[in-house]
Amino acid sequence: MPPAAMAPALSGDAASHTVAKARRAWTARFRAAGIDSPELDARLLVGHALGLDHAALAASATRILVASEESAIAALGNRRLAHEPVARIVGTKEFWSLNLRIDAATLVPRPETETVVEAALAAIDTCRGRARALRIADLGTGSGAILLALLSELHNAFGVGTDLSPQALAVAHDNTRRLGLTRAAYVACDMAAALHGPFDVIVSNPPYIGSDNIAALPPEVRLFDPRLALDGGADGLNSYRAIAAIAPGLLAANGVIVVEIGAGQAEAVAALLAGAGLAPSPPRPDLNNMPRALVAKKGS
Image (cartoon, rainbow, N blue to C red; front, side, top):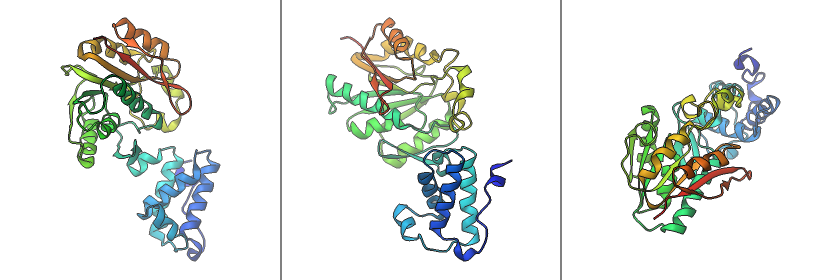
């Protein structure tokens, strides 16, 4: 049964269809469907359909909805019932307090990826300091999330983001323009194939899901994230091998590389980087205490 058939627009006397009732009704539908954060999702989608921010939505709680508004809310609600992430429905996602545009060519930036930003900044603080004119490379930049987060903190830095997808790079360009972080350039290539160093910092959230494991991912990921950004090959390590092969030649003396890693990959990725002559540190955990960001340093 299609989602629209499972969750029709509200029915009955239109005079009872207030903004608050719509929020409650969609919260109940999302909860019944087993969707995480049903109240938040309902608030965001009702607000987006009506063009209201959080404060305006609360102020409009008793306003009666017209039929076209109910239909607009239902259209978005049914997309969520089909497991499309809220960020994809509204077209934006906050990352590191930056409002980023996303589309079908990009991953939805995850909160755990902010661990990469934290680890990179910590390494910079230890090794070089934030005031320096640093050069940063973001391999597989997608929406530009990691690179733009770093540039927002490092006011003298310049960054280059790469991606195989021209569509993803168009999104990154747009985010860069909208945020006014003009110290960034983008190159269409596989990881670092078109780059020339030296870079003080290399960051990457590469594809790291084993090919055979993609089918078991949650539908929000499996059905909507681009496979190009997920598939790390048979063991999930193909991109790390490529990064390890090229990173030592791109890094400046005392430069650092920070990569996001998946569950159970810390030891294998550290071994790849160590085998390339870099010195990995223990992985930095995310908010769920899972190893998430691996930092490795090049010697002087």
